[in-house]
Image (cartoon, rainbow, N blue to C red; front, side, top):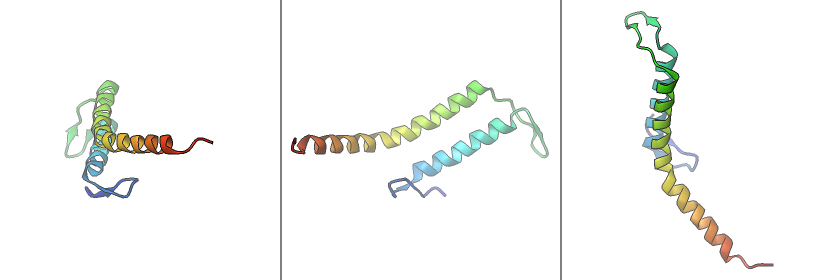
Length: 86
């Protein structure tokens, strides 16, 4: 599961980590305040705590993707500047 493929077709352990973490945060948010068999009462989780958790996960993913996106944008910009004007 941790060796998921990105949209570019590359193996990414980060994407697997983010997916597992995202599912865990959603499960925690959905079960907050509920009483579950064998686990007892789950601690509450406010919308603000959920948003903070989600923002943290997105920061990890964007931090992972940012260098590649920046490199691709620079390559695109340099290719566009090299095209002859008509």
